[in-house]
Image 1 (cartoon, one colour):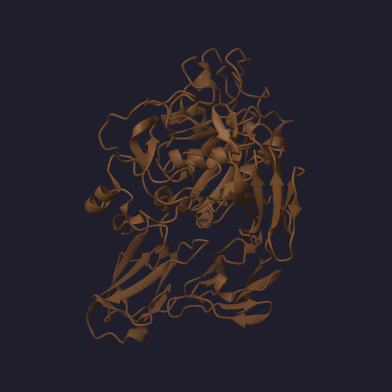
Image 2: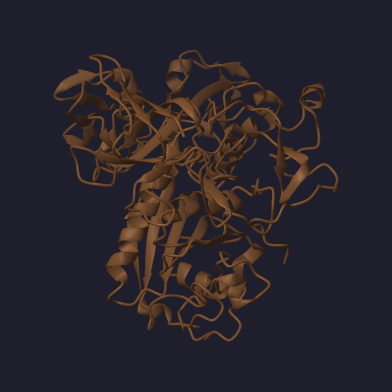
Length: 604
């Protein structure tokens, strides 16, 4: 076992430590229930997030469900999870515990509890472990995850939530997080950064409040830590050289910031703050690229295709079924004997008869590529995670026999129709595959025919007006319908009473003057049920998740000149002077509300 990565959250390979002195009796799998939360496709062909709880009794189960909902609501607002949500199935494993809570919570002298996953703070109730290091039995976690049919260690990620309001978690082979702390829903993406992305902590200490010292090791293997200067990165085309100088998705500029890997000096990271350093901010571009690669590697871009194990005739339609990211569509191109097929871009169905091939044997190749702007490294772009090819041998001397029964025409799969889709989503539908023709899907919005792709439609291009719309895919007498949520969420702010003057001018941001600390509460609203996530940023810095206050999710956020120190971390440091605060909301369909703003002058 390697040294646990810790600061805001700790990580440990395998998360396999059992609490010393804690009961190890585990409930049998029959005491647990698998509940599908989001199913985008066959679990054997998807990346499966399996969320299980520990220390939740039967009476606590509604609280577990609320915790799952909160964690997922935040996760889907964070890239690349937001754009690749369609790659992910989510299953909750509701495990009934005989005792409520987990071991050593919050202190070493707190009770040891017998729970199915044997979760415990303090690295498994050990004095050497940080209090926030939340571990579990990896064997028990695997046993419960195995209840989710079609999943395996290769295509799933386990996330375990503890029935606790104490700040804590861990990330390694599996991820853990406390379920009910104000920051818990932000612990989850951080730990998935470790467990799924293989990312390292960017903290500059190991024990909170204790400086980490000077890094004395070699050039780190970590993609987001280095000893190189910016010029050396450019000259050697190393580390994050492609992103240098750009505005960071987590605020500030991509550059070189000292501190990371639990060291205060001698090692540098790409951004001043990001998900792997400060909970509440997004992944920066460097971490986001890695996470995009790892999520994509859990699925095959080509989900199904015309069989390629034998020669095929030149009188049929060759087809592909691909993945469909929520944020953009994949690129598909075709070549015949190495030459690009004109008009083939984007097609999932290619009619070979239209190619008018010369007699003989030919090689047909389809290339599927994810051209997301989240990835710039050619070696990642060309990897199997983001580029896949399929090849067929076409023989004009082979005549495809007619089917013995009429070829069916019907839908086979699609973007789920159970929940509203966002106004900027890509919606897809797959059909059966007759040998000699490709069924044509016709798309309608509110009864008006609109142009779509071969098997998908990019709603962002339609620039739908605010409100609710009806999207329909028609295939002969068959149809599928989705509700499109094009109404942006709204957010209001509430400040504590200004000590000085308040000026409000028509068409201009409100201006407030405070002579001391002040609080801000953000309240999001939407026209549909579901959690609305609110965010704010100060002076154009990175968007920061509004979670209330670290010690109480129902309390407003507190701004002071020097910040408030909680468990050796500083929150709400604003500095004196004039500042601009922007705020916005994100609804369950992924729509981002228009940002509002106001200014504050803090005098002391």
